[in-house]
Length: 154
Image (cartoon, rainbow, N blue to C red):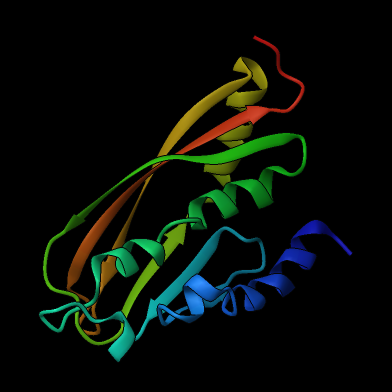
């Protein structure tokens, strides 16, 4: 079984990971090539803040590892992939079910691979939006992903 097939099966178990389970976060879709992940979070009593909207930490948590997963799964075991930094901008109160789509086109992944193969390591920025049920953007997330060739020496 290929690494991608193995991990596609494991994604459904990520929903049982305690920080996701107890925040109401759920991965609802992973495409065949693992270049697109869709995550949603329903409003529950345990993820509301004092003013009745989604807790900001939960909004960030639903966005945390997915760009790293996409890059890591597509580059394979010869590369080290880490989240390096992140920025979240809260634009509107999050209410009801919120959803975020994390997608990196295969052409971009191949460009990253070629780049890292040449220079040994680099960082890459990706942006996602968290939207409410009406499609209104409630937050934007900027993620910086670090990628390094395992056998690279400075």
